[in-house]
Image 1 (tube, rainbow, N blue to C red):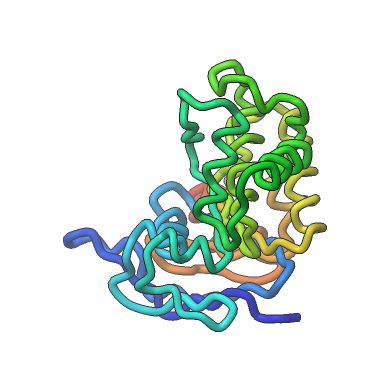
Image 2 (image 1 turned 30 degrees about the vertical axis):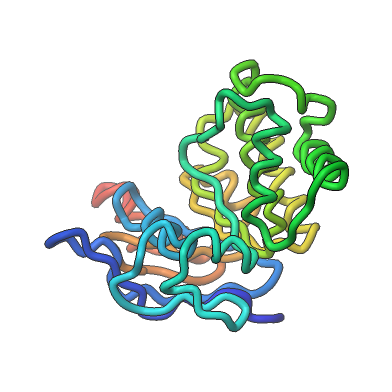
Amino acid sequence: MTLQLEVANLQKRFGGLVAVNDVNFSLQAGEIVGLLGPNGSGKTTVLNMISGALQADGGRVVFRGTELTRQKPHRIAQHGVARTFQLVRPLPTLTVAENVLVSFAFGRYRHWGREAEKLVEEKLEFVGLEGRGRERVGNLTYIDQKRMELARALASEPSLLLLDEWLAGLNPSELKTGIELVQHLQGAGITILLVEHIMEAVRALCTRCIVMNAGQIIASGPSAEVLQQKEVILAYLGDDHA
């Protein structure tokens, strides 16, 4: 397999709080890897540093041989990194298609006019929103807003997708659909770093997991093994379950 992402000695402080402390991991091309941990463990901060939303205080982020550590978010997107957020952030005055079209301005390649419109239609069809591009975002259900956000991320034509609790808040039927969508992304050759609390999704999608607690990695390896480790159970559930 080909090395896609390397995170080395990553650090982030907020005043006296060490949010991320010497984090190291790598992703191979085509993997879906879970980045897990209780709330406040530093997972989203790691995603923010990879995507450029936050500057690292130390360490390096290297993507396909290019160092991203000090680059701006739009430059990182142009290298092929995209992300979703814990809360959907649509542009409410635009249509569904226009929300997706905006992402082409920040992706790896430039598309204009009818070509861009055709690609928007393809992304919406891929996520299950075929024929709904003219709708207002406010008319979408929660799962359909999630689909639109995913289409918007895919419009930047990434090689690496950072999914920050994208499956959160879905009912069982929607969750099944969401898991299938993520599997289709892997089938399309996209590498995925998945921050998630839903263990059903983690077990279905992630061949291996990285678990954080208090800013540090406490476990890393095949998902089935990692999720049974005492330290991981203790971090999530406390002493009574360890």
